Length: 116
Image (tube, rainbow, N blue to C red; front, side, top):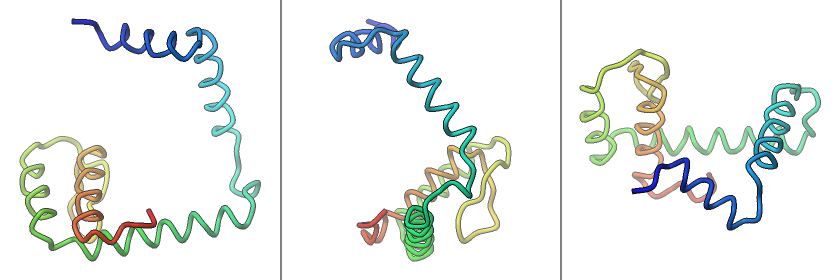
């Protein structure tokens, strides 16, 4: 069985990219994100981001008590880990990846997330 690193290398080769090219592009993107300041963002982008955030929060709160969302929270509650991030609509905190999964489960549970 090939490692993930080998599969990644094969994907890059199929796309005609050398590892150094990809690394350089990723580093440039990281540098851009690090140096970007809120004041530099165009007003339409800020407005769209706000709308997406409100849409996410509305969908998450609407799906908070759906059975599928409750099951996900119940299962992940027992996994433990550091209290890094909030589960929307609760006072619960859990590892960031688990909180993101719980929040995502709540968002899609009502099938109202067409604009996220």
